[in-house]
Amino acid sequence: MNIQPLLDALGLQEDTARALAGDLRAQIDDLQARLREAETHLEHLAITRKTVTGLADRLPVQTSSPDLPGHPDYSRILAVFNEATSPLRARDVCEALGHELLPKNVEGTRAKLKRLVKLDILTEIDTGNFTRKQQTEHRDNRPDSASGQDDVLRDPALHTSGKAGAERYCAPLDGG
Image 1 (cartoon, rainbow, N blue to C red):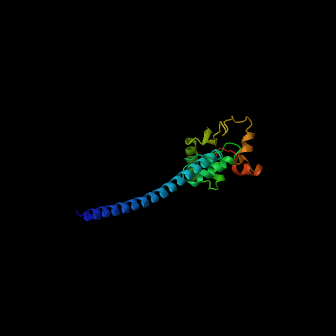
Image 2: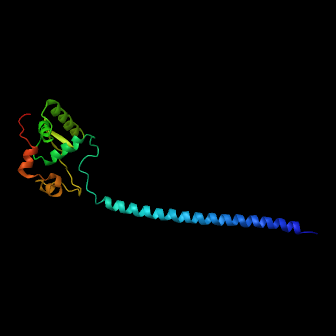
Image 3: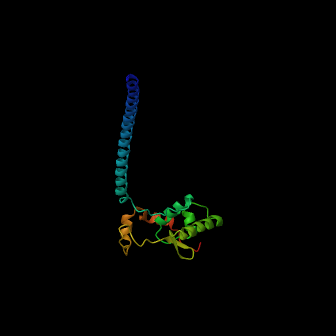
């Protein structure tokens, strides 16, 4: 009996199986390298998450509303109120912003002030007199001090630039 053709067929199958095994080993090596890269990336993401959450506790509490309208006057208006030592009228704010005291400018400013009241950033203490909304708690959840001096020490935005700063932003309330 001639077994040579059978041995040749087995040899071909062995060669095919060796080639397949070699290809699979190459794929395994590639997949192991990709797995190491993915695991390293996961480790870096975990470190980043830990760092970000650790730093988030150190970030200052946001003092202005993230929902401020897009017009640049709103941030300028809040800056005027940060410097103010008494309630302001729309005319006073208009003047502090450097707008001409025309009725259209005063009314536009009044509309912006009313919008800031609706956003709970300002309060209208009586008709036409606006002031910054008082905060009831600080970041560390302690109540406000009765005198408000602690606020001035903690928040540089509450510092005024003396008498000149108050006169610049707080024009006399003469019914305008």
